[in-house]
Image (tube, rainbow, N blue to C red):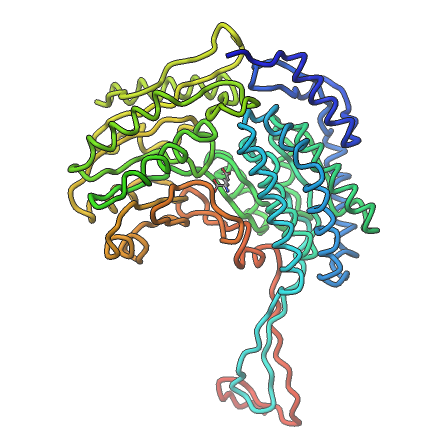
Length: 506
Ligand code: UN1
């Protein structure tokens, strides 16, 4: 397979940036690069500490007026953003492919997820409902109102460089918050494009530009967002390590955080499963996005009676996976993001082998001659019994560990016996098994699917997970509440003073 040259990728990125009216500030602080060739595209300038401070101050100032704009009016800027995303869908998806290495259909899917959340948020702008609660006192009314919270600091990862920003920003804006965004340093061009589209939407809707500010930079910017009292909520997506640093820092100043961290997602395949359906679902969930989704399927817990039949199908499918240029429509697996990601994959495979595992498929490197600086890896399947040290960790690469079980209780215990709790699924035709897996004593994850894989959630549901995944919920359902503050009001419309709990005084 031939790959595009770095020059061609650079030209393509520049053409897109020109069409989107983005002029990146050149510098030496950050490097836009493409995992397709593993090479450098441009040097960029990062925000200085003074600029970060100014951006937070400006977003805070903008919040003071934005919070009083009626929510349905705030929805108009998000509607405009959604329209612009539709208009520029191909260009934005191309930037995602260039910087994150996603195949075209997944990159387009990512932009579709952004459009979907914009539409959801526009509807939400008329549905930020509070409740009225029956008061125990005569002539009293008890009610709740949701108010804007403040500046939301969004920290996002390379693997969903645009959609995770949109989940947070579309919802935060209709909730009356303003946003300061620190994207991954691996995907600066995508974030510049998103920021530009939002700037166009604000300009065209007569909304102050400072409702959103982008800060390109490394860790220090994230630390600033974590420590600054003007940032009411820090919504951070990334590794458990990052979250374990951000969470306590935000908590130390009594700020709020919304953490969406690692996953170590399993699928249980029962003896009654429809393997024609399960096999492709497993291949997409485990090998799709080159194993670089937080919802990627990492553990397969298969009933012993069907293990050989399923493994056969999977190894055959893995043997045929087209790996290579993500711009080529026939490719299903693009590159890993970096050499470090590939090192982590190789180390995990050798740890699994030393812990008694056997590599049944994949694990090799491809296209080393065509692109020596890039890292194209064959998705791997490893048979390993028990959940050893390496199986309990999230390695952000396409490795699927397979183990067998005999009873459903055993399978559920294995599903839950890892530190992370993001996504899970069961493949079964048995209603009892499906319901049990979703019940209180079933999967302990935030996402519990039946007869579909662990990844590829729709935006309409709340997205997030338990335990080391961080507990936060983003995107649909009532996740918006994390972006607002609640007031409880008791109004006495009688001419008597009645105290609650029958207290008498005076
Ligand atoms: C992530 O990998 O950080 O459910 C988010 C999914 C996507 C989102 C993944 N909608 O796979």
